[in-house]
Amino acid sequence: MLDVRGVTRMFGQKAAVDNISFQIDRPAFVGIIGRSGAGKSTFLRMMNRLLDATSGEIRVEGRDVLALKGAEARAWQSHCAMIFQQFNLVPRMDVASNVLHGILNRRSTLQTMLNLWPQADILRALEILDRLGIAEQATKRAEALSGGQQQRVAIARALMQDPKIILADEPMASLDPMNAQVVMDTLKRINVEDGRMVIANLHTLDTARHYCDRVIGMRDGRIVFDGTPDQLSTGIARDIYGADASFNEAATSTAIPADTTADRSYADLMLS
Image (cartoon, rainbow, N blue to C red; front, side, top):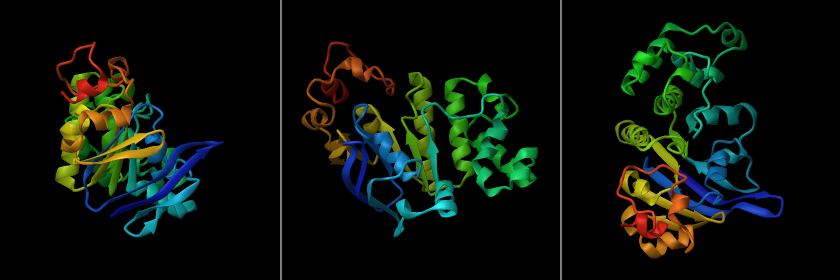
């Protein structure tokens, strides 16, 4: 279903993503883990065509999406929805309209300018919001919602696209532990119930273990681990995060609620 072949992205002389390859043959929930700067976000942005690759191929059902141009590339983006850590909503726009913006690329410029939506699309947006437990927020401005609610609106917008693949770039990073759990539960439910592939960039091993079918560990732009969550060991964690990784670094990203002790190493903490 997804075949990544030798993908590289250079920024000057530095390889942000360095010749990575892997295959996913079913609509799994895949977590990509690693420290900040490991190349996780750069890879997702290439897959969504927000960034061009320097070399390599990303084949989805046999088609190299990195080779798509113009309208074909935009059509691919509608099948490969992106969820960002900062939500990327229009703050002053109501929630329902933000969700409807998931299908902007299917509408004419005039329809967009006049904010005209077919009734069927409006009803579908409301159904998605209801599924995510926030239908009552439909008429409120996005900026009036909590962070967790805003992220669910962003997920609803992604679902409005009816994508084959959902990419989530550190979807918990701006959330408190309770809202982080709600968002991750939502993504997992979409993966299981809809049969959609979800690829999420995550900071913590604990979250990856709890939600993912498969985990890919990146360090310095390269894949240093590719396996199941139960294969993660302290040694592998140190390969991914480095022997000097500390709890303070873990604290920069929200984990699913768990017992923590500040003087333990990152690897030991997340593998306890």
